[in-house]
Length: 131
Image 1: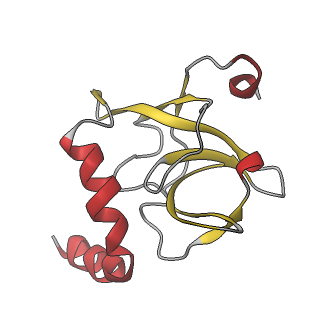
Image 2: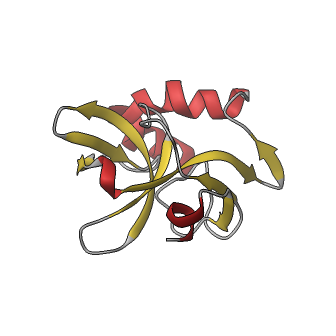
């Protein structure tokens, strides 16, 4: 992977719906960089599944056996994912045309608040679909 080889920041368009409502497929961009320190809970990371597919998810929690990931639209956690499977961490995003950094309110909301709504997400999505 180019990110792993040269350590440069790269951007790519988001593909798939697992990171909704924060990131939308085909609309938003994620800026990724190989991290020099281990990623933390709430970070958005690009990792490689054992089948070779690249996945962009958020770290839900970390245990001794690895990292456990979840998309912002999902209710099921995936893991353990090893540190060696993590390719890069998101350093910023372009959402609805606007650049969003980890210091922004929107980023912090999804990192700290939304991450703790996993059990409520089915209800939240149902209510949202009504409106």
